[in-house]
Length: 471
Image (cartoon, rainbow, N blue to C red; front, side):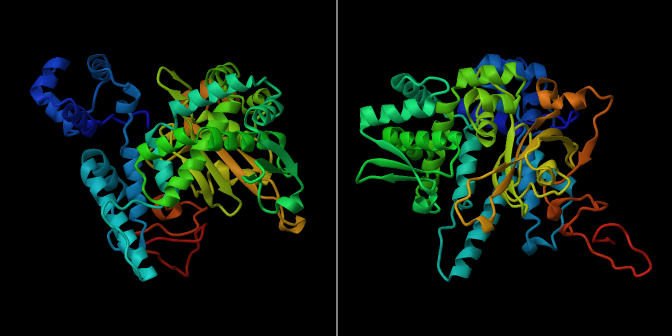
């Protein structure tokens, strides 16, 4: 959040009190504050102080990081995105109005979001000529799984333990993980791992042959990718019951979301197997989050390491809170995970000023940037391109993606890649937005589409830079 931003947690404080089944007077007495002051806090009329946060943690044994995080940024991003819907183009709300709604009336904001989700569901049903369940409507499987990860802090203790147990049972040695794991699967579970030619595998990178009990891997995979795939299959075969339990606890009942969550959880296990929590966190901190060194030390790929860094959220043993973004050459965001104080809208992240969209010009090189959103929130981003396995003909080209990892600027001192900026007298900060349709920076020469709610003007007597001029 911005340095001067006040922490408003009224709705969280009210929820905590109701979960504890105590009155305002009782909670105020336990916190040694007046009931009237507590009432002001719950209604977001007063910001919470640091001393009171510590008092809350000591009195009710809660994770301060969870309750102190102001989720109004997430609501602001989501509502801004909703007002970019053409259906609401005549109902312009300023950024300030939206921020006030999110911070002062979060329940109303959540209700508005649910109402819009229901509208989207009904609209989709109308297009398809059918009906859909509207009550409690949420977006598709990708957004549901993403929300599940964010709600859990992208940390799954049960899978961390399962991966640790597997490493011990298979006696995996650093530098020999693939050979050791493949040998153990053959010896203990009669599963044969084979690397197959690309013309045999076609578009498949991994395929489990149930009849012959073989795991087939494409030759197009690099060593760390083969290891990740075999580790994923290990999770799907040996820890099926655990994954089913986690899926059931998540409460998803549609098949697509359950299938996607199964694959996601298997991928989490694979990352935990390749990069054990304790050793990886120690290495990340000792190398000052040098991603290149972490790739070498754990025989992992750049994207794998970046993704693993977002999972270091064990209570009492946390790493830097990062957000994660994967973007293709057309600017489409195929994977996003909010964190580090940055809330990415479901369709946000498409600002050409932002470094993830610029690293395609310098493929394979790590670039960094200090950026600032419209609300004054500043954060640090590390970005680089990665190649994906090519399974088609050579003339189709090799898939190229930009991987971005970011955090609040206060963590820059702990990151090796930020040294060039922190040692300078003043780091240049680039103003960005989360998408042209919801961005209010009218003087931006990079703008690709006008923001919702602003009238265009066409003056033949003058020409401004950029594609649009506004009345």
